[in-house]
Picture 1 (cartoon, rainbow, N blue to C red):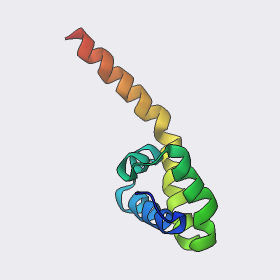
Picture 2: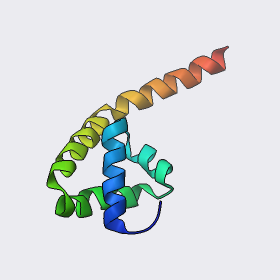
Picture 3: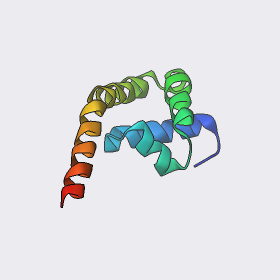
Length: 84
């Protein structure tokens, strides 16, 4: 979803909140880069909707705290598949 940056920011934020999505997940869903998602959420969204920004930021903060856990699980699964 390319197009108007401010409209895109709102759509991305709604998607992240509804699906508890990661930045990478939102980027692939909308066909844009991760850096564009960050730009839209961190720079544009606070100017448009501070309430939506706070909700979205909380989810992204939580995802960032958990990312090392998800990475470890993915690595574990990878090597378990190689054993079989």
